[in-house]
Length: 203
Image (cartoon, rainbow, N blue to C red; front, top):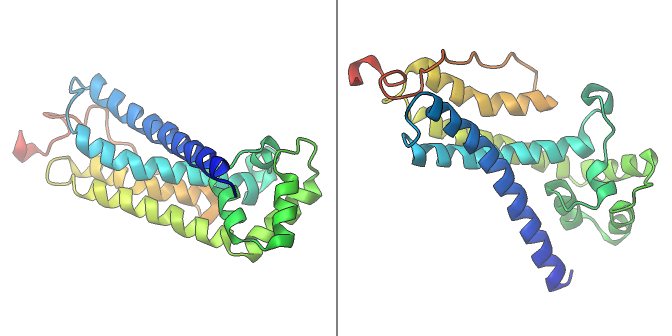
């Protein structure tokens, strides 16, 4: 891989992570804004949003190749056909041998790529352990975010902490990586802001 392509892939990766992270962060900030505390817990929310965003981007990329089209209601392999150097594609290219690389690169950016070719790329990814590694990485990011949320317990009410603690892990389960469970119950409105979300003994 030449240096220009490597730089392009790095820039794409950074842009993907930034979009996902800030989409998570913006939602959290809007919640605090609605509660009247737009600057409260800014650092904590950023620390939480980073692994949640990374996990979400990896989940989307994973499902695009390894997901079940019938369950998702859309075809797989879109990133390959669009020529996107997603998490999955980069992991594939790092794991394959020369013959497998030709299959992956042949599909990459080919808008007319057939379902059979996508299935062949998926099989390569499963054989090379790419799917397993991505599942492990997603769980690691989800666990990191959950650990951040646990640290909020001295300041936030238990039901709010439990929601944010369970949410990243549930999002991984939702991708079909584990037995599916119901989403965590959302905290009551206003329970994550000072005077509302703080524990009663800290008001």
